[in-house]
Image: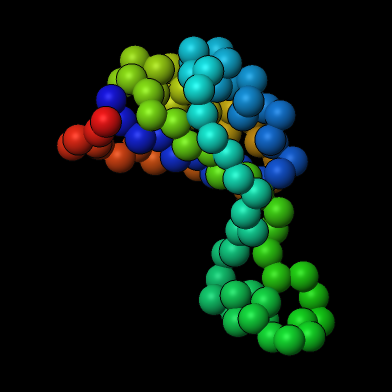
Amino acid sequence: MKLLIVTVVEEYGKEILQLFKKANIESFSGSDIDGYKNQATVLMASNWFPSEKGGVESNMFFSFTTDENIEILFGLITLFNTNLETNNPIRAAVVPIEKFI
Protein backbone atom coordinates (compact mmCIF):
# COMPACT_ATOMS: atom_id res chain seq x y z
CA MET A 1 0.00 0.00 0.00
CA LYS A 2 1.18 3.49 -0.87
CA LEU A 3 -0.02 7.04 -0.42
CA LEU A 4 -1.02 8.71 -3.66
CA ILE A 5 -1.15 12.53 -3.75
CA VAL A 6 -2.62 14.37 -6.74
CA THR A 7 -2.89 18.11 -7.34
CA VAL A 8 -4.95 19.67 -10.11
CA VAL A 9 -6.26 23.11 -11.01
CA GLU A 10 -9.95 23.42 -10.22
CA GLU A 11 -10.76 23.47 -13.94
CA TYR A 12 -9.78 19.77 -14.19
CA GLY A 13 -11.47 18.64 -10.96
CA LYS A 14 -14.16 16.60 -12.72
CA GLU A 15 -11.64 15.00 -15.07
CA ILE A 16 -9.41 13.73 -12.26
CA LEU A 17 -12.42 12.16 -10.55
CA GLN A 18 -13.16 10.28 -13.79
CA LEU A 19 -9.52 9.16 -13.98
CA PHE A 20 -9.68 7.91 -10.38
CA LYS A 21 -12.74 5.86 -11.28
CA LYS A 22 -11.04 4.35 -14.37
CA ALA A 23 -8.05 3.43 -12.19
CA ASN A 24 -10.31 1.67 -9.64
CA ILE A 25 -9.48 4.22 -6.93
CA GLU A 26 -12.83 4.53 -5.23
CA SER A 27 -11.74 5.63 -1.77
CA PHE A 28 -9.95 8.98 -1.49
CA SER A 29 -10.03 12.35 0.22
CA GLY A 30 -9.85 15.82 -1.23
CA SER A 31 -9.36 19.43 -0.27
CA ASP A 32 -9.51 22.85 -1.92
CA ILE A 33 -6.11 24.54 -2.02
CA ASP A 34 -4.47 27.58 -3.61
CA GLY A 35 -1.61 26.86 -6.01
CA TYR A 36 1.40 29.13 -6.39
CA LYS A 37 4.14 29.19 -9.02
CA ASN A 38 6.58 31.74 -7.61
CA GLN A 39 7.61 33.26 -4.30
CA ALA A 40 6.47 36.79 -5.19
CA THR A 41 2.85 35.61 -5.44
CA VAL A 42 3.04 34.02 -1.99
CA LEU A 43 4.41 37.22 -0.49
CA MET A 44 1.70 39.30 -2.15
CA ALA A 45 -1.01 36.98 -0.79
CA SER A 46 0.24 37.53 2.74
CA ASN A 47 -0.45 41.30 2.59
CA TRP A 48 -3.45 42.62 4.49
CA PHE A 49 -4.84 44.22 1.34
CA PRO A 50 -3.39 42.43 -1.70
CA SER A 51 -3.98 44.15 -5.04
CA GLU A 52 -4.60 40.85 -6.82
CA LYS A 53 -5.66 37.33 -5.96
CA GLY A 54 -2.84 35.29 -4.44
CA GLY A 55 -3.14 31.78 -5.82
CA VAL A 56 -4.81 29.60 -8.37
CA GLU A 57 -7.83 27.68 -7.14
CA SER A 58 -6.79 24.04 -7.09
CA ASN A 59 -7.67 20.70 -5.57
CA MET A 60 -5.56 18.12 -3.77
CA PHE A 61 -6.61 14.49 -3.52
CA PHE A 62 -4.99 11.66 -1.64
CA SER A 63 -5.63 7.96 -1.35
CA PHE A 64 -4.08 4.91 0.25
CA THR A 65 -4.09 2.48 -2.67
CA THR A 66 -2.26 -0.35 -4.45
CA ASP A 67 0.64 -0.22 -6.91
CA GLU A 68 -1.64 -1.61 -9.61
CA ASN A 69 -4.16 1.23 -9.28
CA ILE A 70 -1.37 3.81 -9.15
CA GLU A 71 0.19 2.49 -12.37
CA ILE A 72 -3.17 2.69 -14.16
CA LEU A 73 -3.75 6.22 -12.88
CA PHE A 74 -0.26 7.41 -13.85
CA GLY A 75 -0.83 6.13 -17.40
CA LEU A 76 -4.16 7.95 -17.58
CA ILE A 77 -2.67 11.17 -16.18
CA THR A 78 0.24 11.01 -18.63
CA LEU A 79 -2.19 10.67 -21.53
CA PHE A 80 -4.38 13.50 -20.17
CA ASN A 81 -1.39 15.84 -19.74
CA THR A 82 -0.14 15.27 -23.31
CA ASN A 83 -3.38 16.74 -24.68
CA LEU A 84 -3.45 19.90 -22.53
CA GLU A 85 -3.62 23.36 -24.06
CA THR A 86 -2.63 25.04 -20.77
CA ASN A 87 0.50 25.00 -18.63
CA ASN A 88 -1.31 23.39 -15.68
CA PRO A 89 -0.77 19.63 -15.85
CA ILE A 90 -2.15 17.21 -13.31
CA ARG A 91 0.63 16.42 -10.83
CA ALA A 92 0.89 13.17 -8.88
CA ALA A 93 3.33 11.75 -6.35
CA VAL A 94 3.57 8.44 -4.53
CA VAL A 95 4.85 8.01 -0.99
CA PRO A 96 5.67 4.55 0.39
CA ILE A 97 3.98 3.62 3.67
CA GLU A 98 6.12 1.77 6.22
CA LYS A 99 3.39 1.12 8.72
CA PHE A 100 -0.35 1.64 8.97
CA ILE A 101 -3.32 0.61 11.13
